[in-house]
Length: 365
Image (tube, rainbow, N blue to C red; front, side, top):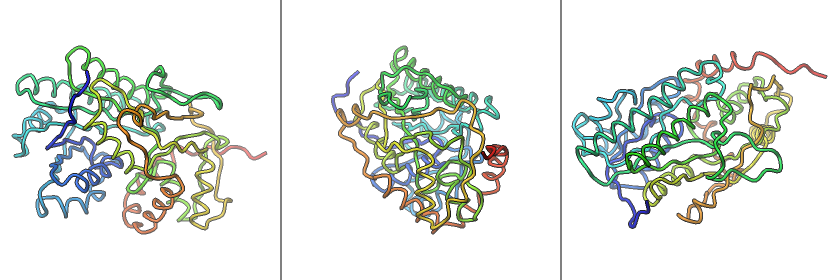
């Protein structure tokens, strides 16, 4: 299915909009698209944080221009989702686009407890798809569903392998990536079987403001600022592609408004870098010694390398990332330095998880 004209949504439902990528996406949408109304559905589990939306709620909540409306709820609640889509429960116009970000997203946590990942990532996505199908059957209208996925569904690359393309077979290696692959395939099935107007995006590692401190970059920044050990898995040479979160937000809007229904679009920052080099760059930026690095036993099923080919997104839709890695890391470090109160409020949960994950250090030679 090819779209002849750009899609122009007026009311967008963002699921998981109090999380890291979600809150940055909501902020970007409201800033860049002054005509847009954004509904934000989030259950506020451990990584969802309304403090990440404090400025948004002041400027665009009920006391601001009213273009941001937060709803606390579960994507598995089909009645709630149907009400939001139809526009009755929240007193809003009908939704004409969903950007689906709500997910359990941490690989280490998926190893410790896979069931929650299947419930949220698979069952939750199925509920949204069914709600959309029912709503559009009763009230047909132009509509888009964006499934925000991950490059981890493709598995792992060797040092000389070409980057992942949208044609790369799915080969997930963790419970997290398996749950996301399953959700992606459900979306594909709903496009093919029910003609649901949906698109899948698969993005590389995001970084930037408001990221929960269990992920690599904020974990290293916050620990270094407290002069605590920095746990690095294995030899630290696992390679990831890094993208600044605002660049991801712009890519999602580009796909939503101009992407082809039924397509998959890879989103990457074209910044392949070993994890250890990321840690070294952060330490230099913070003026902290490399002696803080502690090598810990490698994660089970740890993919060695990810790399993303963004040719389709570039060629079809003209998107390119705006931030180089060095620039993005500098902005991220500056944000964490300036917003210590925010990350100190969420450290108890992040550090509890880290303590469970990084107990075993690699024996020194």
